[in-house]
Image (cartoon, rainbow, N blue to C red; front, side, top):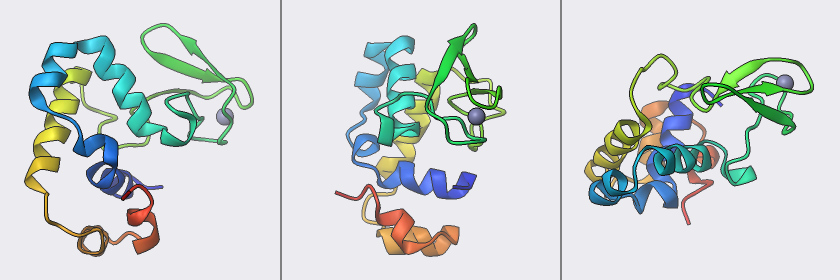
Amino acid sequence: MDALCFFAHFLLSAAARTLSLKAIYAAGEDKAYATFRKLRWPETHGEAVCPQCGDVDAYEIPRRRFKCSACGKQFSVTSGTIFASRKMSFVDLLAAICIIVNGAKGISALQVSRDLDCQRKTALVHRT
Ligand SMILES: [Zn+2]
């Protein structure tokens, strides 16, 4: 999944649409990190998935990074996403997503996928 399609998933996922700014800031950084992991890896409920080989047997290393047991690649929850180079807190990242999601209400999955040049099927995955 490329970075833009990942972003489309974010916009359309049920989890993202339940975010509220107040709740995000009230819950704090650790909770925001946990939520971000669930948004990033919904199929494993937030357990790290290696972006290189797809292995789910990664272990945590310092500074919120992971190392893949299978291929040895080090990665973080933002690796391979549009947020990868950002030095923002997870609270701020979630808040930014929340604002975008709220602004994007009413935009159909088809429209988003067309705009972002994703496959329609991909954009509809988390639409329920
Ligand atoms: Zn790997």
